[in-house]
Length: 311
Image 1 (cartoon, helix red, strand yellow):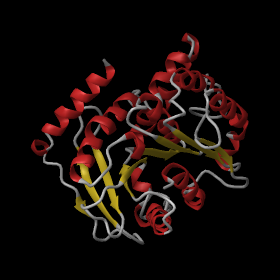
Image 2 (cartoon, rainbow, N blue to C red):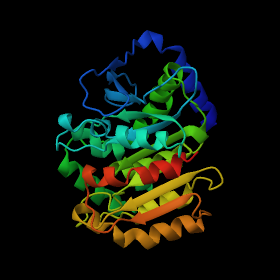
Image 3 (cartoon, rainbow, N blue to C red):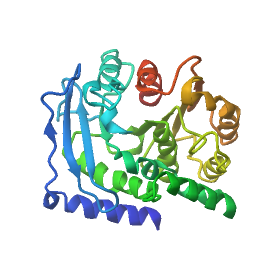
């Protein structure tokens, strides 16, 4: 029934694409090294607050061939450091272009979904995981979240519905993509790391691989006990994607916020090994001395991309 519902939503959205007047415009002054970035200023959605969506096309992009697609969270941080809040970027265009030139990976495009800062936590939090908290822990978590943001709402499920039933149909219609699971991937860092494994667990028929970089296993303030990550692990165990058809990449550093993540290394390894994963479809890598920043993530981005999109 769930897949029928998803099919109906996707078809409905596809039929009504033209009526929504969605327009992706080239960003002529974007400071990028290769390829072209197009932006939809406010992607319309029935589920979440409209926000910008960027589409990066590699040099030589052609409608006469097909490309895999990598969906990435925090889209405004991916390409151009001159426009980001901290003047850092992932350098996605540089890394992706170098890997494609080397023929190590499939050709692909990138779809960057921007965050809205005051909504980011609620949008990227794995919503169904809170059902694995007991009553007291759930109340404590919601109190913590609302204290940080009085307008806090759990929107992770709606965020994914937007990607799967609204953004993806548009991308597959307007660009030369392979729309199948084997060529559809999702990636993000920190809260985006949580949302990436949540995406592949919630929609294993859509996403074939997920890169979860500096995954924020504490789920909030790491100095507080909010019942996570056990609830995350319990949710994943109950919703484990099939290792025969999926790949999952995790990593973490040891400095700044990342210093809290090595404590979960063994638990993550055991969780996925018991779920049937091995070195061919699962990684959980430690990067000693690296911190929680785009400057650190850009230096190792080639590793998860190669792992997921290896040709």
